[in-house]
Image (cartoon, rainbow, N blue to C red; front, side, top):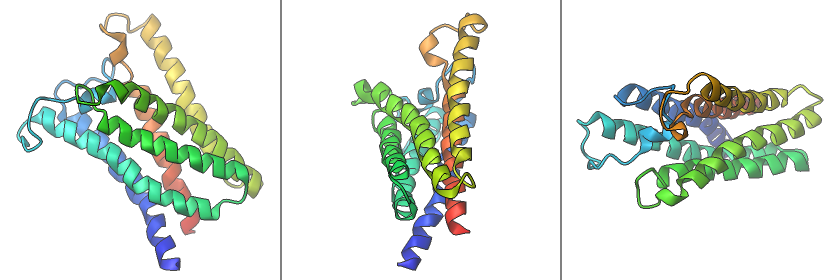
Amino acid sequence: MVERRVALTKLGYVGPVVSVGLTVLATLLDPKFDWRSRSLSSMGEATGQSLTALGNLDQLAFSAFNLGLFAAGLFGLPFLAVLWADSGNRIERIGIGLAAITLLGSIGVAVAFLDGPFDPFHFLAAMVFFFGLTFTLWVYGTGLAKRTGGDHGLGAVWFANVHAVAWIVWIMLEAFLFTDDGDTWTYFAVPEFVGAVCFAAFVFLQARRLDA
């Protein structure tokens, strides 16, 4: 039992590093990617190439990005079992439930990639992920802070605040400054990445807390 807990806790280190690392790699590989005028999902858009077309940078970026989304879910969901076992109140457990929904949203974004067969569900999956991660951090952080007297959990709440502010600020910049970049539905890469990093950092720090 102890060995299983240790193994599952390690997933809390591996998942964030792999998922964020693959996302960053995709931004470097994709020749069309631009932080100001694209979304992260544009890297996960179908390229019309075979998955084995590894010499194509678009296809490599597509594969890296979507693998990162799968990694977040596949490593993160088992890790939640450790958080559940550690939880001490209902608020934390609600937060863990929200985290599970959030991670399923991450997988959903990869499954419903743009221009793919499940494209109509892409926007819904993305909303589940980004709204889910914010409420996960607020709710779980509040529960953990309540249980530990503020020794832990407040960082998660602030990660949620940073994510929410990032979206507000970026949308304002887009509305009043970046007004000549074309389709405004493609401009979300910066706040999307902020959210992904905040959630990854939260998972990593919880693994560290449990490993202490």
